[in-house]
Image (cartoon, one colour):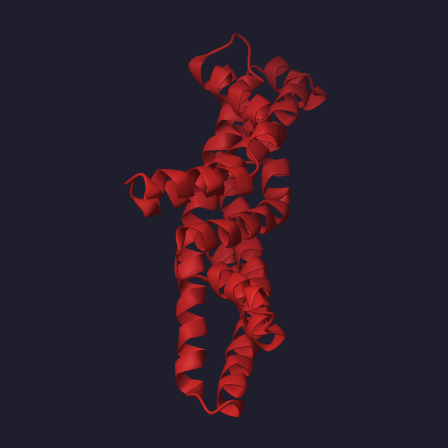
Length: 250
């Protein structure tokens, strides 16, 4: 990742980490007020935050990346295996909401399957469907753009045109829509953690809501807001890096 992308990510860290720190401070204060260990409560919230980040970030990045490539292939003639995969993801997107995949994962775990791979799959698949849905029309539009025709008229080969013009155009809406994908992934993670009994922020939030504890729900909700900002900043930094790798604007 280039220095500019890393610097952009570092510049956003204070704003994204502040809600997490505030949530940990609130958890400490709530626990101290009822005679419990505030330090243990704050540590528990931070540990849950780290768990949710490690659960969501790989699934979101892998799903969005593979979905974007499959969606871009789906916009290329003739049809290829990757293109058919992209079309399948686009068609399956409305049929596979995160809460449904979380419920199916919970049923599979209770039948003896491993929880971690199913949790990642339940979060990665909606992200892949969302990315494919954004990338395919962008690729189709790029293939008929005046810039691509001009590049072909200048004698550039097909591989160069696809890499430096069409592919960045297909990836642009995916990176631009990463914030919505991150919010959807965090909502899915809340369902996954609750149904699979995983020690993340989603489980803390749902457990506190079940007993009607507003003071117990707020720290987890604040930390989730911080994670949403952190994932959005990470997506923006990776989007800038991908544009450099694909040679956008050259």
